[in-house]
Length: 238
Image 1 (cartoon, rainbow, N blue to C red):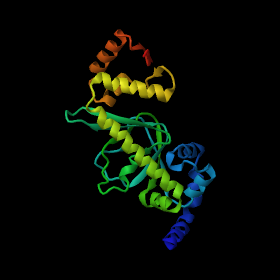
Image 2: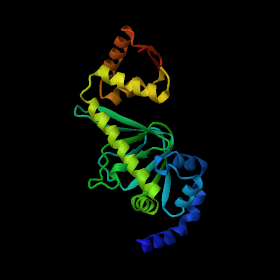
Image 3: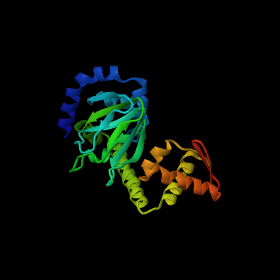
Image 4: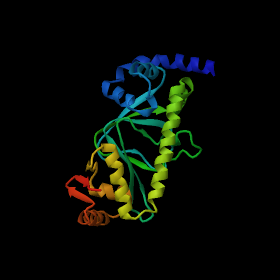
């Protein structure tokens, strides 16, 4: 293994100058914000990038980044912009699963899975840049630095926790889904006046419901004094 790492580093050192030249501040900021590099300095991140092959790909709004069913062969990290992950429900309706922002990894749990097919389609919702690293290079980083290994395990564990909550939501009615979302956003934003980070249609897709069902629920919650809806803001009263 030590010989492999030496040969790997020696081979990739020929590429280090090219990688260094293409590593701009925005890309470095995105990597530094990624949980994969938690506890690792920017200087160390730059040194690590000297030993691997990577590419930064730009996407326009509406462009597909990953397609459900494709093989997961790379680690992807959003370094700027915003993307959405969605899948098609049984009725043919698109269900938005989650949003990804700068520093988020895309489907890391599938990189080393037996079935490497992406379960979701990922689309840029604005101008976006994605850092792409080959699977053997992310494996090299994991084997080379225990901090990377621990961070990767934590990322996958958090995904399992997130999906467990998602599964739990399947048994909830519309009001329960909305209430849970608002409580989580209140905790995240640390305010009772919540800025809803997506359109009403996108929020309905996130819940896997029709838009009119969401609007009716919000109206009912406002009428019974639970919330106050003010454009993109929703204030919790209880």
